[in-house]
Amino acid sequence: MNQINCPKGHGAMEPKKINRTVSFKGIEVNIAENAFVCPTCQLSAGTVQAAGKIQKTIADAYRKQTGLLTGEDIKRLRNEKDMAQADLAEISGFGLASIKRWETGAIQTQSADRTLRLHLLDECMENNMTGNRAFSIPRIKLVANAFEKVLCRAILIANDKMLFAAKYLWYADMIAKKEIGRSMTGATYAHLPLGPQLNNYRELLDDIQNADTLKTESLSDYELNIISRIAGRFPEDQMVFDASHKEPAWLKTRNGELISYFWADKLAVQID
Ligand SMILES: [Zn+2]
Image: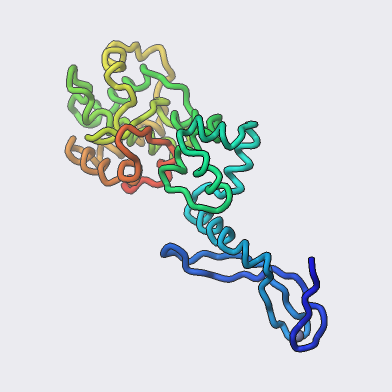
C-alpha cells in the first residue's frame, strides 16, 4: 500500500478502521471504513481503495442489519457446496448476472434471500421446515384432540379441509418451536390464500383422521400447557383465523411458499 503523508507535514499517516453511521434505504447502518489517520493531528483521509469499496461495505452492513445474506456469505456458502455461480443460478432459477451482482454488493430482496438460503443452507432447511422434529401424522391428531378437549368442540371435522384446525396446529407448532426449540408435530406449513395450512393437507386429511395416536410419543405437560394457552387466547375459530393473518410469517411470505420455523421467533401474537 502506498504511503500517504499528512498534508500538514506530520509525516506518514497510519491505516485505521473508522466507525461511522450512514443512512441507507431508510435505516441507520454502522460501517467500519478504511482510512488513513495522522497520529499527530488525527486528520483522516479516505483511500482510493476505500472509496471504491464503500458502496459494497454499506450494502453488506445493511444486509447484516436486516438479516440478509451478504455477498461474502453467498460466495462462501456456494463454495462450501462446490457450486459455481452458474450452478447456483441454475438450481435457484435466478440469472447468472443476478448471482454475480449479489456476490459483489447488490442487495437481494427478502424473497430472493429466502430462495438463496433454501439452496445454500439446505441441510438446515430440513429442520427449518419441520421445527427439529420428524414429521408425525399421529402427533397431528394428538395435538388436534388436545385442542378439542380444552376448546370443548371438534376441530378435526371430516371434509372441512382443516381451515381452522390447521391454524391451531400451526400456532402450537410455532410456539413449541419458540419455547422448547422443537415443534410438536414436525409438520411443514405453507402460505395458502386463507392462512397458514399444512403443506399438502389434501393428501393428509384421511391419514390424520385414521391415525393411531398410541403409536407416537404422547404430549408432554409443557406441550399441553401451550395448547391450553392457545385455546384460551383463541376460543373461537374466527379469532385464530384473524390472528394468523396478522402474523409476519403470513404477511411476508407469498402464496404457495413454505413457512419456515424461522418465523417462530417473530410471532406477532403473545400467548402467556
Ligand atoms: Zn497531521
